[in-house]
Length: 377
Image 1: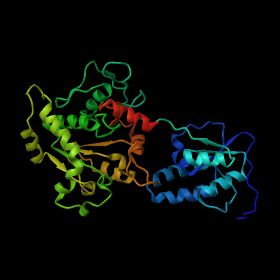
Image 2: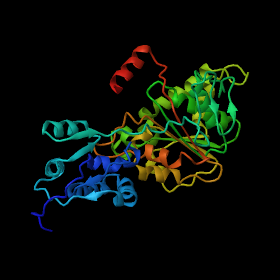
Image 3: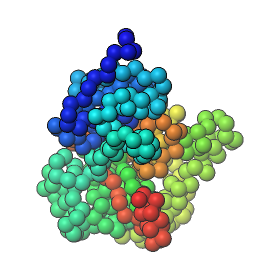
Image 4: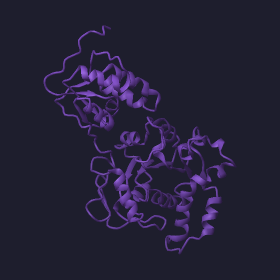
């Protein structure tokens, strides 16, 4: 290809020159219909390199759904990476860079180039009227499931735990629905996502709807090391990282009134932990298994790649349920590695056997709520 060939000239009206991260996020961006889309050779090179970083699906979506809608610029930059992208933008001054990278946007503006920050659609939170299990928690009361024509007039208690608000009430109701086989639960620290989930799960274990509770979490929560690096047997290896589950179960057994039977005792909690009704395993031990009559709860699911989520979802057999819990704003994945939880939400949100609830309120101390609001700004 002739490097001296003149660059393609953009039309007189503003057009977007897409950054690499913008190409990955195109399905989630607000894009005016009357603007053209341009990419450079360097962007295509970077997209190709992302296939090995957990982004192969996103790259494939771009190639299948957007490649015919973008125009490739002829300019061949001398530099690579961001400098190569800026060089191409400088050779096409009528184009406007569209990026979701604040630092890159600022750098482009400082270089005298036209740049805009991409505006994303808000991620699906489970709210609305569009999908089968969408809900509303803004009208007062205890929430509404529009497609099901269900309006709650009181809280839906599980294992003696009363919901604190409409979003928790809807969460526990959907968790108890036998027609839902896959569910995702998101929310900030203190929103009750783990406690409410375990309360609903324990209700179903106790009434015999499922035979076993299987709890797991990704190895990123263990510092990224393989389980074999840790001392002790499997329970001793995982014990420190499963304390949050043990704390929640102890609370449910010892502090909550259950079905008019008085209080569950600590002895009953210990008997349950020692029984064959609960199992705690690392995710690497679950691959290849077939789960029958089991509820699988996966904590810290924001640290899972899409490939790992596929491996988990495909474990479901007859009368089984998978619940993925996570906070997408607190990922421990290495820089440049994309989590797959939000991709799962977008893929399944219109499936009647799937539900998603994103909790928004923190019920810890007021200073925690104020702190979370400050770091999210």
